[in-house]
Every structure is written in C-alpha cells, then in structure tokens.
Image (cartoon, rainbow, N blue to C red):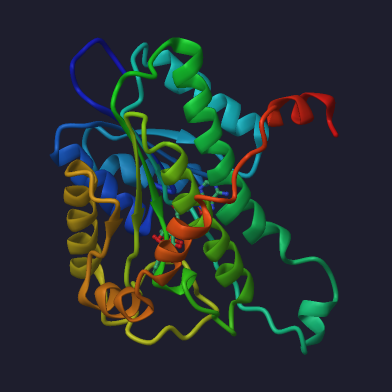
Length: 272
Ligand SMILES: NC(=O)c1ccc[n+]([C@@H]2O[C@H](COP(=O)([O-])OP(=O)(O)OC[C@H]3O[C@@H](n4cnc5c(N)ncnc54)[C@H](OP(=O)(O)O)[C@@H]3O)[C@@H](O)[C@H]2O)c1
C-alpha cells in the first residue's frame, strides 16, 4: 500500500461470502483493502472481481501466517485503520455419532473462530503500541452471529466458539473504552454462503447474493459510523433483540467489583 491518505483495512476471509462483499463496500468507501484467505484461487477470483483489491494467502490459524500478515501490514508504512475479523468455519457435529467420537474434530473451529481472531486483535494492538500509533483512531470489527447468544445443537463448536468470541469482543470493548480503538460486533443473518455446507440453515437459501451485498453494505456503514453492535438485517434485529442486553447490564454491575488486583502484572511476569 503506497503513500496516501487513504484508509487501510484488512479483511480475514475476504476472498468469499460475506467477507468478499465487505471488501467490495470498503473499496467503494475508498479504503485500500487487503483480503486474506487460504485458497489462492479464491483470492485470485476475488481480485479479478474487485478492481484494486489486494490479496494475501494467509491461514489465520497458523502463527507464521499471522506474522506474515502483520509484516505486510507494517509494510503499509502507516497505521491500519480497520481489522475485520471475518474468517470462520462451521461444521456439523453429533456427540452420539461415531464420526464425531472417533477423533478430535473440535480444533479447527476453536483455532479459526476463536483463537485466531483473538491473536490477530492482540497483534493489531501490539503493532500500534510498537509503532507509536496508539493515538490514531482505528476499528476492530468482529463478525459474530446471533447464534453466539444461544446454543446451536447441530453445530455445537461453532456455537461455543462464536459465544466465546462474542464475550471476548464485549470485554475487549470495555478494556479499550478510553482508547481511540472502537470495537464493533456485526450480527449477520443466515446467508447463502459457503459457511455451513453440511447444515440445513432456515432462511439461508433465500438470502443470496443481493442480501449478502445488502448486509455487507449495512455492516460497512455501521463500521464507518462507529456503531458498536451492527444488526444488518431484520432477522439479526429479531434474534439479537429477543435475547436483549441483560448480559451487558449484568456486566455493568459485576465489573465494578471484579477487578485486577494491585500488582497483577507481577503475577504474570513471575508466571504464578
Ligand atoms: N453465512 C451465514 O449464515 C452467517 C451467519 C451469521 C454469521 N456469519 C459469519 O460471517 C462470517 C463470514 O462467513 P461466510 O458465511 O461468508 O463464510 P464462507 O462463505 O465460508 O467464507 C469464509 C471465508 O473465510 C475464509 N477462511 C476460512 N478459514 C480460514 C482460515 N483458516 N484462514 C483464512 N481464511 C479462512 C474462506 O476462504 P478459504 O476457505 O480460502 O480460506 C472464505 O474467504 C463468519 O464469521 C460467520 O461466522 C455467517
């Protein structure tokens, strides 16, 4: 990315599905956009579809790939304005079925949906500190799901990892409240993408290309206006609205007394 005043964004899983549509709308909003994904051919197709899109083959679950991504970001020579943690996978599992009990199949979803975006967020914040960019406004936009707020029986690891990521996102927002980093959470509806090919997801088939594009457009508008909780579709509003914000209210009251002890950093340094 060259010298300019253009804002820069990285979108994980930007080669396909909702991530690709988010890239489209960020480019339309005049961002320089770097899309990541594992498959080079998907990245090539994305670059052919979206003029100006930059791509990098990155598996977000691999530490060396994450480091390579952040080397590329450092190479921009200016602060990253927006990190969109969008890449995720979802698989059907049944703990009464031999195929699920035969071997550890949890790791992929835990690494992709939970561990990787947390690690990318840390690297993003660490780079800002290292480079002295901490006073620059920036956004971490985490792509969540209404299904992060209630159990999903058929795909319990997607459910668990997205729930965990949801609470990481809310906690991170609380920690960064006095910094110029805005933490955004996007709750898309069921969409007809490549996410859950082994699942029957009600409503997904009807939410094809036009809906995916509209959800991405609304998500980018929300990111640009610093909306913390983006509900880009009536289904998102209905599901997230039904759960309500009781957990945030509870957090407001509990978090005033649940604190780090004086000297907690020393505990961390001593490894105790
Ligand atoms: N689709 C829905 O119904 C729905 C509903 C609510 C929320 N969401 C959320 O929306 C986001 C996007 O999902 P989608 O439906 O667009 O999924 P998708 O069509 O399956 O696309 C996923 C994208 O992530 C990339 N990806 C997957 N694993 C990766 C890895 N380890 N490293 C780097 N990139 C990786 C994929 O490319 P490669 O395979 O080439 O790596 C692809 O670009 C997810 O966070 C999902 O949870 C989706």
